[in-house]
Length: 404
View 1: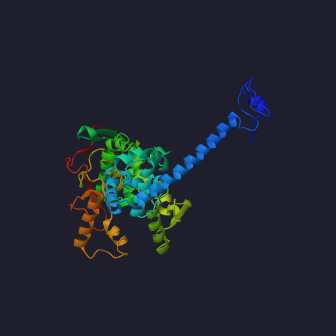
View 2 (view 1 turned 120 degrees about the horizontal axis):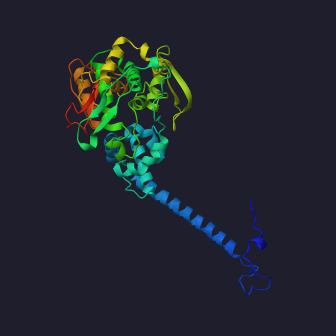
View 3 (view 1 turned 120 degrees about the vertical axis):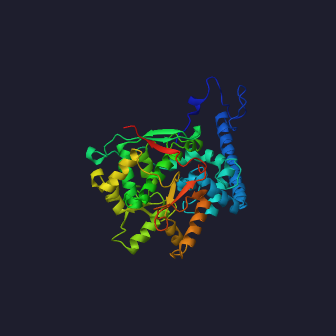
């Protein structure tokens, strides 16, 4: 604690007064508060008043949050999560607004409304464009993401170029060119092995094209949608692939994915060994981790360790020689598994029930299912979806141009 030396700290030529009456010069008696102490008391009083104001504001914002139209907010958040792109960062958004990452959609909306109210935004519980702009920088600090993909140290671990240019030939807002690299090829190969098996078939080709489309249209560093959301985007395809694929994430980003992995590990520990990496996901007791098989094998595969069919598929993709079976699809997922997860482990009764569920799933996300495609097994494997933001663009808008 610091103490003022009153004689030393007073202004020269000033007299603080003596007992028996105020100083003629200062008008301050010995029993009165000196100016410096009076200022201090004023500051304390002001802080107390500010604290009381903050408490009242918090109470008012809590009241407004409880009164928000939760059903409408949940519905609009489902739309904006995909339209704006914050859905993949929902745990970080939840932490920013003071909610638990695994909170229900209704509780999340109420937390958003409190956050909006305290910042004098419209307290509707919806993370729309204005709210997203207000919180984007805070979300970015809550979302750890490698800016570049790890570099391979052995030159034989990478495919040999030259490779083509990933190009978007569309209206100005989407125009884009990116020179594909050997590092991109390595991580694409790892991705299709983990996500689709790595065979040279329509399912694996569709996964490759969905990833190329998503990077080219939405997530690269100069993307219109990244700029609109005030996010940096990904500087390379390799860095995007590693962050995007649950198979390639060093630690699973989502606590829901981690919980599913833990359950699989308990059912079949030999096949699905879940390796804990330390700590728990914020707001939960779920331990962080990843499948040991993913960390120790798939994420460390070298180029020469892939099957010839996998290497051939990737090289053709990077040279613009791979047929595109899904047009502008940029999203994919196993909706057969999603159905089981949401129906207590019960599988769809047949194709019609699976198709209806897949169409509803797409509608909720503001996507459009590509429909049946020749050679694609979308029922038990990945189903593919077009983001409605680009569904009216020509299906060949994204290309790989190779002049080698």
